[in-house]
Length: 428
Image (cartoon, rainbow, N blue to C red; front, side):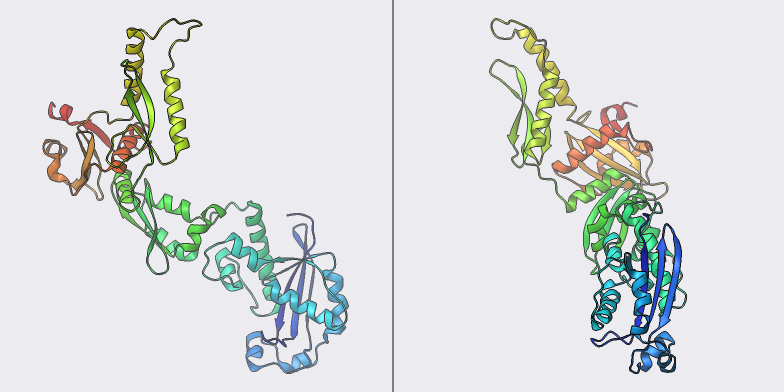
């Protein structure tokens, strides 16, 4: 924290109405990480105070009658405030009321302000309530002498310290909103799909996760990057899928994948193969699919660089058959990376419960479906179709996701799934 002088203020008043008057004020001077001065006083409002305010604050009309009037303490207050940053929980109330009292005396009060209410609303999006009690509860701050100026000022000072760390990104403790904690505690460290719901119970976001609890905590951690989801999410729930691949399938049911461009391998009149971008048409086959044209161009450039053959200072005539054959082999190898390792394969992985297995079946270069079973692996490999509980018919998003998943399997730290060619499996 910098060396500026901060005055943390709290004011108790006769009410919230237009003609409200100050009945108590507390000022805590905070500089260089320590309290250097504390000032508090009752103030005679020159009128009676309601029973409600007397009960709320424990300040009686008799005490106020004996207290100094504002003009008696105005100089002592101004002396502390001048040159400082005014801090309070709702400066629209505290500072404006204080400024009004000085204006009544023919003076003005101009200070830089730090409103812990407004800063909290910005730094902690999605909190149900931003009053002093809710924020102190969120940060674990204990309030003593609630609704007395000095007690609330001390609590506001502690809140100010916490918010200052948040603003400077120096607070290391990870925080979650109280109404999210209940759902987060119910999630497990298993693969599945997450459902983020609003206050009406409507799902506002689906997320496939390798580890549901870890993923949900990443997305619901109180930080600026998660602002939109924090504001909109009232609760989070999870559904175990056994493997992250099946979780991705379930997400695709809600967010279908629709590309706009495709990169395919085509053949020229001379028999030479090369890659080309085309607009995607529903049902058409391709090697690489893209929503953005610039991404498609980038991939095409990468492929063309891979195909680049030997460079000659001088060439006479077209490429020879041998050169074309060599380039076509390169093109076929590059295209093979975009296809399944084999047209007929099965991926066997973890199930949703102990002893259960999941399976994903590929036939003819397309995912047929997935399922769960307690049957032994040998039985699954013999008749995999019989164990499918969800089927697909040439689902592009599912096919692409499965291809990517197979490529990533060998790099996964916790590799519980494995794919196998059905031809190899049946020869065992």
